[in-house]
Image (cartoon, rainbow, N blue to C red; front, side, top):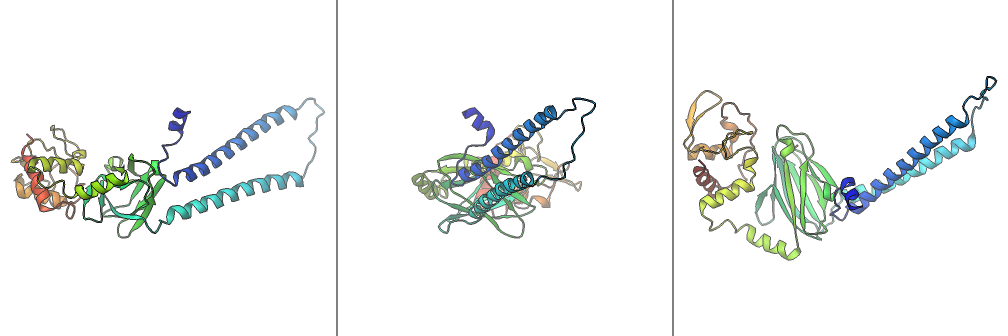
Length: 313
Ligand code: CUA
């Protein structure tokens, strides 16, 4: 049964999941019953009314009131149940509880960024407490993305130039995957993040320490963590292979041929500029696909990343 459950639906880890699944099951099972009934009737009638002799004549039947009312009223009732149930669920999904904890979510090609009330910014990881409604206020900085967490049964488009929101309440500590479910270009299928659900106490601790955790780390170590946290390796390898972007291996001091034919030497200012406004200088052979980190990373963080990049050779 467990293996069937895993195959059938993702684990239900939010307060709204049970109701959504129940409606899904209702539609599914009702359809299955009708399918089996109709197919069985077809075979039965094929056998019962098959032509048995030369003299068989099909009787002329124009209509049958009882039958027609039955097959109109029963589906009508079923459809109205699905409508009422679905509409109630839809309203619930659209209306965040007023005491919801608010987090800003920003979608850009191709990452998810989360901003908390205390100013902490995390990329690729959304940290939330269990048993507390969370409201995400979302927007995109470029094209349309869509925020989808199968475990929570929630999905909402994320748009440039306006806010949209979605809410959920996680019922257990653990991790769930966020997918982008609106095709948004080359690395759309890699545009993932995870929701990390903490117990209430752990979340308080995380909130209190997250913003401070970086202080006191040696720059190289901090830089390495920032590269991981911002998912830079999705597009930049450290082993020399070419992905969406140039490799980090031996990047510092490298002679780089640019799209406009000039050759530049990779130094501190080049890296800084490439992080803040990547579109302003494109390496030959690559597409202008990197998201700008202006406003996401501050000067100290950028300096740390530069120090880390110097060590990759
Ligand atoms: Cu973002 Cu697909």
